[in-house]
Amino acid sequence: MPIPLRPIILLLPLLFAHAFVLPKSDGQLEDWCIADEQTPDDELQIALDWACGKGGADCSNIQPHQPCYLPNTIRDHASYAFNNYYQKFKHRGASCYFNSAAMITQLDPSHDHCKFDYLS
Image (cartoon, rainbow, N blue to C red; front, side, top):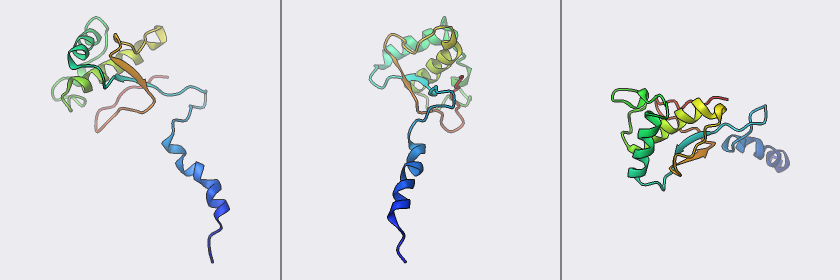
């Protein structure tokens, strides 16, 4: 007996809903701050140094032998530091700008053992 198509078509949006960013129950989207792919490494390094220094980001997880050290690239380390700063200070008016070196994403950049914080 063939499967009726109408119920399957009605369920398709539910099956693919996980692929889209859905707002949290309070209407806010989860967002992370990451390095912009188009920013040159030398500019990322300047922004990374500021974030981990005067900016006040906790950059201990991107040090050697820590969970976010690998991959050991300026872009990956900058993404971690930018997000740490942004999450830590966004409720005090901080932005994800870093002199145009960063951008907001709704896709969690966490990977392997490296967890990018998200604070609501």
